[in-house]
Length: 346
Ligand SMILES: NC(=O)c1ccc[n+]([C@@H]2O[C@H](COP(=O)([O-])OP(=O)(O)OC[C@H]3O[C@@H](n4cnc5c(N)ncnc54)[C@H](O)[C@@H]3O)[C@@H](O)[C@H]2O)c1
Ligand SMILES: [Zn+2]
Image (cartoon, rainbow, N blue to C red):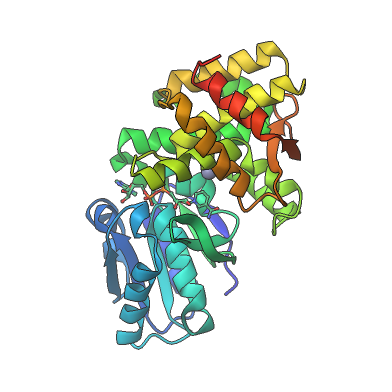
């Protein structure tokens, strides 16, 4: 397939028709979860050719090999061959898992993503990471492979619950903090209601795309996209195990505050910059409760992070606003101190 890889549009139907006319396919399946079936499928239904609908339960807890089996069985029962096309209509869970199922079914179906959450539009659909969770470990099984096309239309955000929109916004904040100080200075004066989504999404995608193109397999620079994620992921994994729900973006917001403090401690940003970042994130996200005795356990997850080498924690920290450095070593004590700072125990 020789499609334009990422298309940002305000007319998803026109774009989808164009795409379908350019793709050579034998059959089409659309992967949805309960929410995207209700809110997003009706938007595109009329322009789809004859297709099978594959519906799965919504939520990270279903991003598993068991759900993949369901998807592969459906494709098999409809006798999909390698010229089949899977359309992933949903958030990051649908995109990551649908892409994984597509690329492993008969060694590779064609697939396109129609991301329907802000997080999937600015982050998960870009960069080719596909996969599922395994035995409680996030994205433990997967591969790198770009979708044949990503079609992004902010229309899908209209039905998105406010907390999901805010959660995705954490990645927008991250992209600006690591790569664009001028835009950060504009952004941090805005409320979510004032935001022009097409422009904001385009800008965020451009940053992620640029970074990924320089380092597709995350051997170096791509790691700057993990700003906020070393501590954030650790909290997310810990809470997942405890059955305490936390949205990805909420964990990243927490992680960005903790890692901004670490950047400050390592004299990579000024106190003024640290305070401004913290104030902005606090204006969008409530602080997450972390008990003093949970900090040790959370940091043990940071030590196990698959992005580390050996037993040292490696993080991406800010190097001034609008720039970041990766593979900065943290001691467990430093990581714990940043969480104590976040939770106000110091
Ligand atoms: N591949 C990557 O590079 C990458 C990057 C970041 C995150 N991720 C993954 O993305 C996932 C999180 O993505 P997410 O936040 O989109 O989660 P999600 O897919 O679970 O969507 C969040 C919720 O919103 C609902 N929803 C989706 N679109 C909707 C709409 N338009 N209207 C109403 N409800 C809607 C979903 O059903 C779900 O309940 C995680 O599994 C994470 O690992 C992947
Ligand atoms: Zn993230």
